[in-house]
Length: 196
Image 1 (tube, one colour):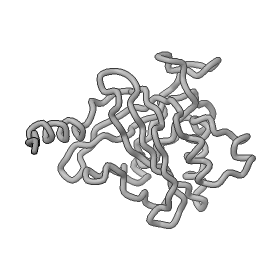
Image 2: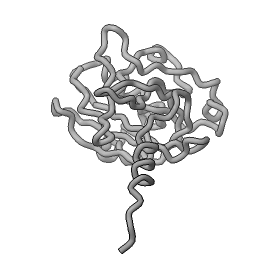
Image 3: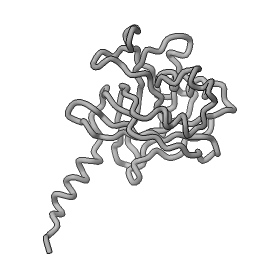
Image 4: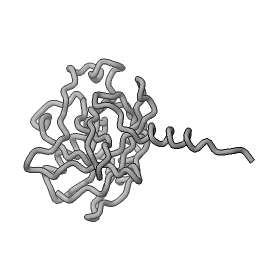
């Protein structure tokens, strides 16, 4: 029977859970899981995978919640969907939350990643999304629990095809919104997003 290299396994575990440095990363929506929040609202858990640079293959977890009872939350949700390329034309087909989640998969985006302590351990969080957003919602804050994204940028350019330079869209809540939702060090997922 071969021996187990426990030191190597511990090193792999430590490296895999250590947060990546703060900054802007090219990522792909690796997976989405439609589910229900603790308040009974439709929710999509999202796993981003870094696709370039020294931290390629690392994963970042977050979620978005559809809150039909809050106009502000709905504006944020649809801004995120527009940014992902899921526009009014897509929603005119009356998709289910499962179809929305499926349509998000494999989209290439850029996100600004931060580091936030959670239960005494530093974890990554999605601080900003970067996309060609314009109009009255462009500067609206978004709760960290919901990443939202934008259509695929040109590689390395930070712009969408035919679009202007991509602005940074803050997702960090203002003093009047809920605090950011940390990612669980045990499950690698964010806890349910509080109701708006």
